[in-house]
Length: 186
Image (cartoon, helix red, strand yellow):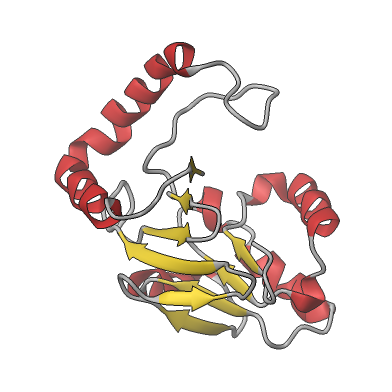
């Protein structure tokens, strides 16, 4: 998310390191990255945090700050074996990147991981939902061009397997985002 400051939301699983690194270097200059927002510490979101911190440091970036929930930062301190700057955010805390990109954090624990956090960009209406509205489906398209009818069974299976056991947490999280002007779920 690029405003006057830049934020990266999540990393990837370390098994995708080469692909992720190539894509990341095309999109941003790590020497100027201000924030790394961590939705939760499950390896598919956090597996390359240490590598991103290392790459940023090699690029001369000593200001990069990791943003996460209290539990997330505690977990990361035991997963990433290099010192890093961090900021613990709570529900409703906002981070102004400039250029209209005002990020608001929503603590949504137990949506299949205890340290889950959503990030909402008020400028674009994009809600970074961690895994809450995901599915186990992959196509060659970066966006869901298939249509809701075709994707609905995949969403249903994902919800039934991963979210339904924590349905109360899902409802609580939905209540926390009800006032957002949502345009995109990511």
